[in-house]
Length: 408
Image (cartoon, one colour):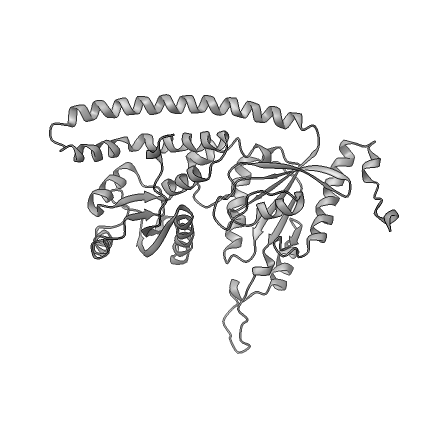
């Protein structure tokens, strides 16, 4: 894949732009949360955020995404801070918006989709992940070819270039369409190989770790399987699905660590990565990992549940695994404070009671890093796995023999 599909990785300075879209009933708090996540995405990509701009609109401006007054404010800031080389928008921009904003601001313009694709491109390790990301990048690039070519026209003077420009665009479009077709074929071959691998694993019980990005799935994977799966405090540390054989109390099962979900995940990426999520579809048990120390963990649960419904709407045993209890903090309310409690005023015990009381999904509260409540976690998960395993292999009673007492 050509280097032109990626942005540079040195520490660049960036400005973030978000719109409080009233047509979607968004609030200022919503857009601040989205921009905080965009800030983390930018940091993961290697950029430092120096300023955020937000604007309340009935709907985004079809020509420039934000209004002309706000665009002037951004332009003034960039002129006063020439070392800021990048402007990142929190939503996917249309080719027209991208072209207009780039012309006015004279900076590198990225949108959320472009940024996520860039991170995925830098994180992809295997042929499967690289092919999926490359396909998503070309699909994103296709409608934006006009913008890319007009950028070249400016470099070559522009006047008299319209004819060749149009010819070049058609040539580029044909090349990219051919590449997309080839990548889709490559993915089909890889998917067939993956399906064969899954069949060859036999009928062992399958457990899948799912969750928002950066909630600690890979850390739990390492803890249970005693293997070294890449784990890092950055978004999308894991792109490829990793499968390990694990044994708890003599019962073997397969544990899969999957790519993390995120708000506004680009459509092309979801389509490209659907085969990666076959492990989720074929899982017998789901461990939905949640970072309880994150102030918006309830929203994360909702995003994951919605994505999971798209992938596989069949009922199957599911655990909500609230991870990072060691990092949980809250603000205790003063006794004379008569205002209603907010999310930040609930203690860990109160949140536990609330979630356990809901009763629709079993809840476990752990710290994978600090090894807190791990035995209870193992016992609960083992109980469900053993039940499925014994139904599948009714005559394999020897698997359940526990000789630990005889060793004393």
